[in-house]
Image (tube, rainbow, N blue to C red; front, side, top):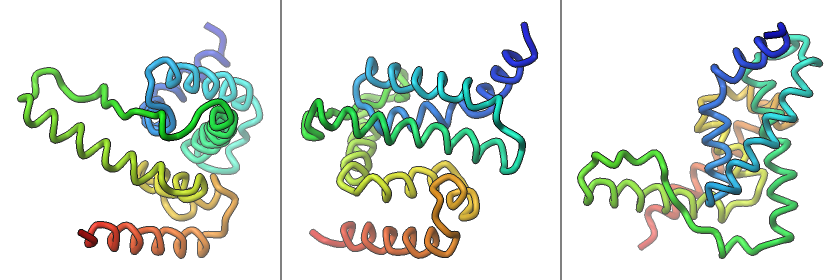
Amino acid sequence: MSSEAARFEAVLSRHRPSIARLCRHHEASAEARRDLEQEILVALWRALATFRGDCAEKTFVLRVAHNVAVTHVARSARARSLDALTVADPSTSPAAPPDQAFDHRAEIARIERRLRAMDLASQQLVLLALEGCTTGEIAEVTGLTPTNVTTRLSRLRQALAQEQEEP
């Protein structure tokens, strides 16, 4: 295995779960998720040669993944309506009791609907925050200032909390 391939495999071993979650958010169908993931992996393979370590590896990978996802979503939006999306959670364990699995899927579906109702920039901020990225990392991925990231996330949290309180 070449050193480039070994490096790529090492990066994937550390960041593939984040990429999978991003794909699951942007695409409801398994086939579309696989397509998006492949697009991200190809872009990551190409971009990895240019990674000089100016930022954290996680930030670099998420920047590539989110840029590909934004392009993918914009292209997909022209082809279909967001209303046609369905939500599935393949991570639910088949061993879980049916009522617990149903509750979990219902909660995931509710969260996915709320995220999809947001504009794409807000979705990106929330997803990066859910991935555990710091304000600085989110700023690097999105190109916003750290202050802008903090402000936007605060406003999004407030809006989501208000929605939660409404009957």
